[in-house]
Image 1 (cartoon, rainbow, N blue to C red):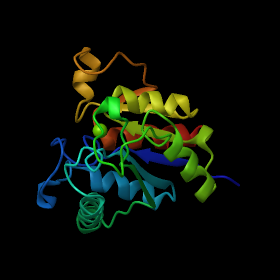
Image 2: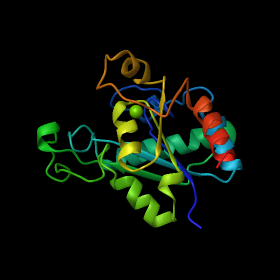
Image 3: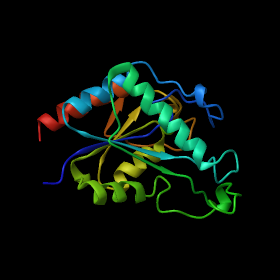
Length: 196
Ligand SMILES: [Mg+2]
């Protein structure tokens, strides 16, 4: 049977929002995040990173640097709480109109959030039931992605979350739940799954 999953945005949800992270050591976890991911792991809930990473398209750094950041992220999660991500998806592509300049990565992509490509790919690869799944993000576009793909969308107040709620960033959005942080989001998800 297809299983539920929790899709996690990266910047502002797992790690402290710090713009385009050019030094690997500048990626740092938000407190409590590793324990929250571990809770999902212990419950056997599939954890999947879905992240827009347009640095390569903007010629800020190569894809190998994005991979190095994800390696550090995984190491920190493991070191702090024995936590792990079951899959990692990211979109290095960006349209020219949105600022893409590199020859290899400048294009419109179904994978760029709020388009649903990464979720559809993960659902296909890992047999996930998107209708019984959750997306946790700190931007209105993360909530849009959730609703575009039929998931519950949770907005955390970490990262850009507070600005989104005040109307100072992107656009107004209607999340299914507003969470203080990932730990709060995971508690709500666990309660929701108990009631299925
Ligand atoms: Mg984010």
